[in-house]
Length: 123
Image (cartoon, rainbow, N blue to C red; front, side, top):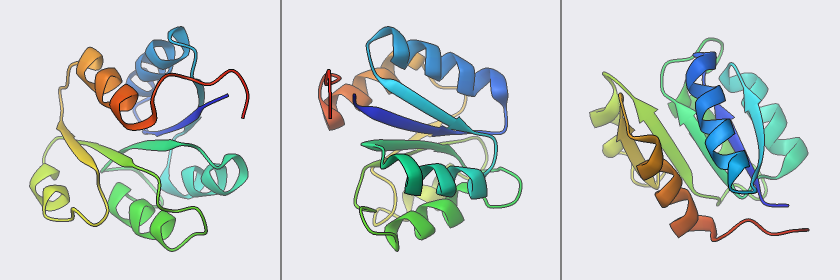
């Protein structure tokens, strides 16, 4: 299965993204902070990461930097942010795409499909 990691401390946003992606056949693992997301990244080796910027323990920028230092850390990372979007846009080395909050879920899903293709039945 194609696994997507969603990291956001706003559980409603994480759940909406997870439901939308799971409806298409992707497997989704979720974390409420950057440290947990990094642990899940190391455990599940997702095809793509979607992260919020402002989270407890480790923010989205720190998470992206840690992922890039991790084996397999070349996966696309999408960032969702309210106030810090411009900071993230300046870091093209870390983020494949930056979404301003609020964002359109269908657009996010479209970008995921462009980057990882349709969900696979088995890895």
